[in-house]
Length: 363
Image 1 (cartoon, rainbow, N blue to C red):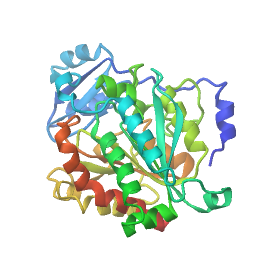
Image 2: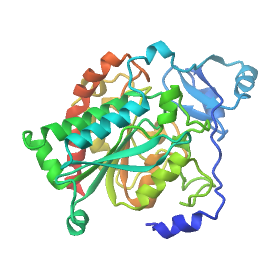
Image 3: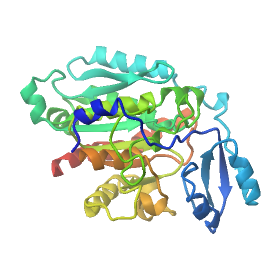
Image 4: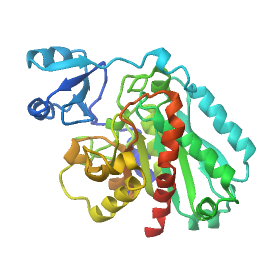
């Protein structure tokens, strides 16, 4: 387990991280996955959302020349059109909503700004527990849990679900016995948006064009030291925050598929707690018909590496260096669906969102 001293030392060190810059992206038709295997050998290219028909790939402007030379069948992935996102709140309005909830429920909610995005937007956690202000002894005895969403700016549904979940927890404390028990026993930290700049632009990367979920230290690559170095501000903020807490269980939310992804993402080795993470994944998916009845993933779950390799992901980083077991939950096939669908998706996931926090009893 690394300590904050490692971070202090890391301030003066250069990171070996590969800069996963995104200048363009394409949907590639590749049902036999032959091209996928070749692209997987190029760490500067980012693979995502592999399906039976193909996959997404992101990279530099030269990516189009590479795909053309390979005679690939592909189409460009364009930013979400403005009219599609008109009903969604701006990042600033999300923060205002969180501030309003803190003001409305000061005995339950404490907002914690852990840093700023590239463009200076707040990176904000809501801490929900009862009472909100615990003494040091009580804090040390009460376990910590974490949800993070919207690491990819154009995968928006998780952000909205997390805001709804914060409000749900606060409004129903004292009347819903399940919620009351959770808030009385767990410190719940929720970050609706880790990439507010990307959300504002409706693009995957942050404002430096970097994929945040490929930018954490990775124990299987050259970037195998848990040091700060020259990383993106959103990554630095999360790394510092994680080092100051003792999370045992977490999840992060994405879009573009419908599946619960369990570790490892970065290597083929069987995860040390493989039976546990598979059971927790099944417990999440079994309450959601569209996951449980998936035609692509058995009962809506998958091992990350068997799906496709992800280096520099937050999921494996959090466990390897902190023992913080984390799942990655893909909520909707459409990354930016009509805003009118959000309420239905929240209702579909609500029971599982609560149930996953209840898994803390196993630790």
